[in-house]
Image (cartoon, rainbow, N blue to C red):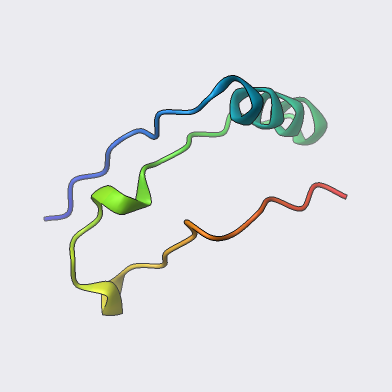
Length: 54
């Protein structure tokens, strides 16, 4: 079973997450994708992705 870990976010990332929560009216949770299993065929890596909130 895969163990998910919460991401450690800096101040800017937390602000962006908070703004998205307010915009969409939901609670968001950031997970550390680097902590996922090494079998990348079963995981989606978003480490190089940016959130587009427009």
